Image 1 (cartoon, helix red, strand yellow):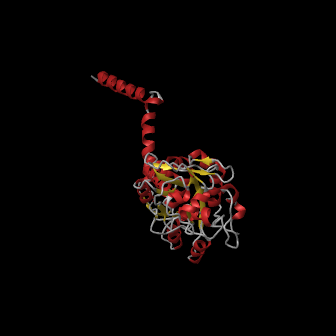
Image 2 (cartoon, one colour):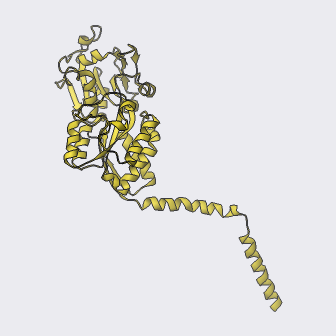
Image 3 (cartoon, helix red, strand yellow):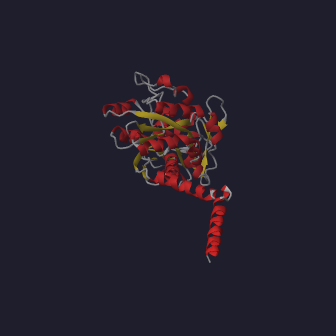
Amino acid sequence: MTRTILNLVFLTSLFAVAAGCGTPKATEPSNTATTPEVANSDNASLSGNITIEGSSTVEPISNRAKEKFNSSFPNVNISVSGQGTGNGFKALGAKECDVSDASRPIKQKELDLCKAAGINFYEVPVAYDGLTIVVNKENDFVNELTVDQLKQIFREDTAAKTWKEVNDAWPDKKIAIYAPGIASGTHDYFVEVIGKKDGKGLRADEQTMLSEDDKALVTGVKGDKFAIGFFGFSYYDANNDELKAVSIINPDSSKAVAPSMASIESGEYAPFSRPLFIYVNSESYQRAEVKEFVDYYLENVVSIVKDASYVPLPADVYALAKAHIVKDLSGSHYLDSEGNKRDGSVTEVYVEENLPE
């Protein structure tokens, strides 16, 4: 009996040793399986609220950044609102948002508002956009326009009433205009192209509907055969089956160029290719959830921008933006010491020596 018990003990020990001496591959899946749980647990511990205000053009990019970030950090609540670039800068200056989306660089009066409130910010270019001129899908007479023709249609001092006034071969039908409102950076950029030199603004008569909501502009042009409007390329791209993009005569080459990812990136789509920005409150960046989000945004910016149907900037620009944040270099590259706007491509203007000392 004793020998039988000893044999059983021996066999049990032998099986235990054999089980412990199995190949490592048997235990690797369980270790691998628990690793994401640990990572998810760590990510889930990050919480807080982030408020993003501003440009409706940049809104799809920040929304995509939010979606991707929340897939890894589900307990950070991010609010994204696209009520216009000007309203975004007002919110930044009033300490009502952590990040301001902008479809143009900050203006001196907006910078002064931030200074008065003791707010410093990081200026971060995130993408190229092409301001896209669109007409109704059934419009069979407008295929391309010159900048001068755009002035004739959109400016307050010319304000053509009918298409025939723009081109004698076109219909004698009233032009219905759908354009971004005055709080929109897209509005500002368009006016800069067609009226800045002459000090003229966008028309605001009974034939013009202004709105900061790009979706309302899309709906307006879709519903009127003789309508024309403009907004960011991504909104056209999302509705290209129901809208018609108008080619623009490049003032330098005299060639008609249609908006596309390629023509925007190359600069051929002139004068309506432009950079887009986010402005980050540097004090907000000290909060863990904001820092994690902004760092994630920049680390994944190329995929985020492409997912939102925009064009990524050169890698050097993103690298410089990251370096500026690390070195806590705040302020705008686009305003000189006297408050004048610097002109030039993003790679020419977005350089460290253009930051205030």
